[in-house]
Amino acid sequence: MDNLPWLTLLMAVPAVGALVVAVLPSRSALLARPIALGVALLTLVIGIAATATSFTRGSSEQFQMVERHEWIPQLGVSYALGVDGISLALILMALVLVPVCILAAWDDVPEGGTWHKGYFALLLSLLPFMVGVFAAIDVFLFYVFFEAMLIPVYFLIGMYGGARRQAAAMKFLLFSLAGGLIMLVGVIALYLQGPGGDDGFLVERLTGLEIGGATERWIFIAFFIAFAVKAPMWPVHTWLPDAAAASRPAVATLLVGVLDKVGTYGMIRFCLQLFPEASQWATPVVVTLAVFSILYGAILAIGEPDIMRLIAFTSVSHFGFIVLGIFAFTSVAQSGANFYMVNHGFATAGLFLVAGMLIARRGSQRIDDYGGWQRATPWLAGAFLVAGLATLSLPGLSTFVSEFLVIAGSWSTQPVATAFAVWGVVLAAIYVLLMYKRIFTGPPPVVDPEGAGTDRGEGEAPAAAELPYVRADLDEGVTPARLTAPLRDLGWREKAVVAPVVVALVVLGFFPGPVLDTLDPAVERTLQIVGVSDPAPSVPADAGSTSGSDH
Image 1: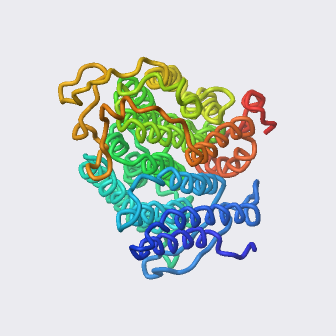
Image 2 (image 1 turned 90 degrees about the vertical axis):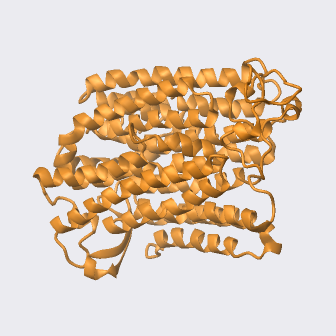
Image 3 (image 1 turned 45 degrees about the vertical axis):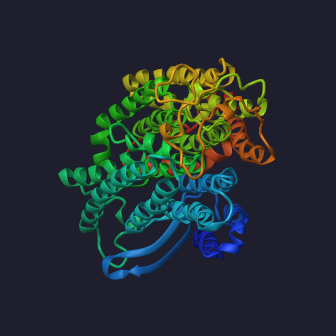
């Protein structure tokens, strides 16, 4: 089974599945949901089988499961796929979250018709792009996936999002395209500096070029800008809160939890490994931006009244921690940063998906339209609490391990930046606990029997036209009837949505060793390429004992 084209299979199965869902006849449109879910689960099974049979932890090879075929030899472009521990961990995270999000989106669009099947076809079509962008080991192929994945996201936001969906989708597209075009200039310049030939874009051939000087720095900047937009980092993050607020919760989950990881993954795979000298040259500026992102995102989250935008701002803060760990250039910090990417995906999924369940019941994204839900919805409150505690990195949950490693590993090389970054942990506790208090333990909103108006007092419900997420043909928004309707706790489908997320956060919190063991060889190889000598083990003994791992 080692010879099977596992990575191509992981892309082909969901691509074919999305096509099947898209061309379903109208009378069979109700099959769109089960087919999409079944294909996503099948892809997950294939991914697990590929990992079990064809990936060896601790291998000295740079990439495993390698597939390589000529594509455009005249330009040096190959269809080349392969994974190391970092890319495999991100692919497996995506394979888990896609079926979870499809199940969460079950009732997002009314049953039947083109709108219904189109929504689930687009959700499923994200999966091959996710696998491709993390598995590509040809720089040009990576760029193709990097740009192509914008297409389904644009339509998912622009066609199925809220009242401001078109503006949010266009802003997302313009920011992403601008970053992508800048990177394209860097890709071309890199090829001109490279060895050329039929496979001149292969990462293995471009690693260690020693371009040096101003040329390497300018190419690094071109790549870094594109990845900073995607990450997202301050000051090119402004598209994210709008996109998250206008998206359906399942779409926001995949956008922030998976697709935005392409930014930080790209920094490791390309910025550090292809431009090691320029990476160290840019470190002071990058670390400063990372710390600013940590504090800026957390402070804005504290005062944000919209729950979806609040979660988006928390992600700006968390991505700052990831970037800090990457550019600390220690094995401890980089192990933490890579593990953080996986853990943030699950924690953000928990917040966005449970927020979606709240919105489905109340019809509002405004936190002030909630209050006192804990007693009536204990399962819902519990799921939100676990995801929230993971966001603030509570010991025992997976995010604690990764955040601890980033902070501990960054201290030796970036003590001043780390001292400022630690305040992000304090601010995280404030915005998470305030959000939980206002939604689940605070006083319920006051009902306005006359309906909502534009000049609202405390507790009054907003008109549907005011809500940033409402599609008039799909949602009613907040109404007095919704404010007084009996609250219902999680149903079986919703429990099935939150269960794998909660399990992942707990299991990876107590047993991080297997994932860290998978990441370690890639981390060590990255530091060797950059030229950093770090004999310290990738996981300190304190972290292992705290998390229950013997790694």
